[in-house]
Amino acid sequence: MQRYFVPKEQFDESGVRITGEDARHIRRVMRMNVADTIICANNKGDAFLCKIKAFEDQSVIAGIESVLTSESELPVRITIAQGIPKGDKFDTIVQKGTECGAAAFIPFHSERTVSVWQKEKSEKKRLRLQRIAKEASEQTHRLLIPEVEPLMTLDQLLIFSERFTCKAVAYEETAKAGVQSGLPSLLRNMKAGNSLIMVIGPEGGLSPNEAERLKQSGFLLCGLGPRILRTETAALYLLSCASYHFELLQREVDR
Amino acid sequence: MQRYFVPKEQFDESGVRITGEDARHIRRVMRMNVADTIICANNKGDAFLCKIKAFEDQSVIAGIESVLTSESELPVRITIAQGIPKGDKFDTIVQKGTECGAAAFIPFHSERTVSVWQKEKSEKKRLRLQRIAKEASEQTHRLLIPEVEPLMTLDQLLIFSERFTCKAVAYEETAKAGVQSGLPSLLRNMKAGNSLIMVIGPEGGLSPNEAERLKQSGFLLCGLGPRILRTETAALYLLSCASYHFELLQREVDR
Image (cartoon, rainbow over all chains, first blue to last red; front, top):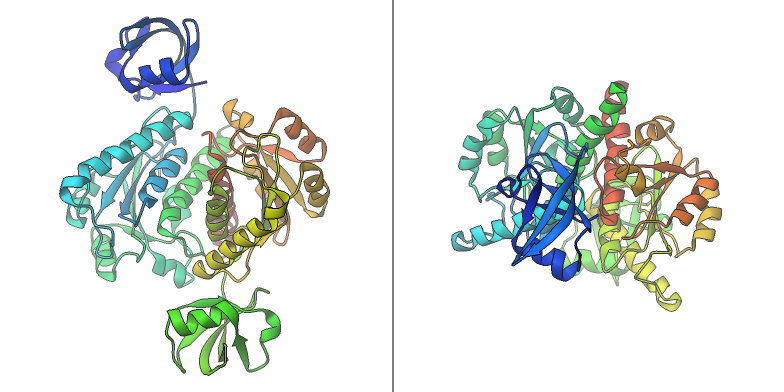
């Protein structure tokens, strides 16, 4: 069934008003009629089965039929701080990272970043990634859309990172040296509701200087398995491992 | 350091002869000289640190300096049988699947496959994917290049699947129904050296008829987490979970 994220203020007790691009999508692309059903999520963790009641001007009015329960959100919030990669790789990271349960993405300029975001274009790029996150959230049946934060420098990232329960950095040298990652112990130390920020370097990796600064700010250097992963694969590997740990292994224990 | 896969018969006790595209890469792209070092792997699970001794005609002759040990291969062999997806998504699946440790890939025609491979072009497509697997293996420091098998029908796939220890199919309806996957128990039942074939449908998923036929042939219907994944993300999720299970959690226990 088609899913749409609708701002919370467009909900009232009995129904929801869908506007803008989504209303157009329902009318023009899906060619839906009165009595057709859709799912509306409020991006606060709630989703509702809704039935279309009327088409008004540019809006679609739908009534709430029932509340949906879902386990489609990871019990821990994982934010991917990604050194800007080349080409359209950030699109892939946001799309697939959203599918795999990321809570937020932070683009940051790293010493070895090749593809620099010009200041005047960076908000446009952020909005584009935010749109990809919304579409991927709908497609993958998430209840929350991951936030795409504004572009940061490493200094800004270090300050921003203070709000997280756990801080880690994917450091390739750990994999190259054959050292097994502290990933299982990192995940085991997290409880439901905790937050993790994972810093991932661009194609050339983080510089030793950057790794050292992150380490001094309390970031754990963490390997992501024994193979060297491309920058655009690292976040997916981490999120899949976290999903396996919290959503498959741990829920199995809970039952 | 630059890595190359060299056929086993081009190795002798003291050295290795690199020919063809790789020899050209060493000379023209990397512009290496005598005494420069490279890593040569024989695709049988061995890798060697080698030093260039001479350039002969179109070949590069290198001496073996030492044997490298590595834990870059998953202890279980996982084959991804992938319903042909649209566009260049199969390239992504092979590239990232190789990074995440896949042993082989099988392209198959599924009822809902949109992008049909014409018979006369299918060997060309297979060779292209095989080349992507080789390059990704070198980049990710693997000791084995995943095989890309020829295009199969579901009937051929069912016969081929008899050689595997474990057989499973990623079935979206399991995720949609909120049923948690049997993935942890599937992985727990596998021992080092075992093999698994995982069938993944194309964009539209497998038809109920295909799922039923696989089930009757002994395939376990298996969900891949609580979110609906795109077809090109499913293999990466599975392989990352297997890596976490066998390479991070289990090796942690072994130490």
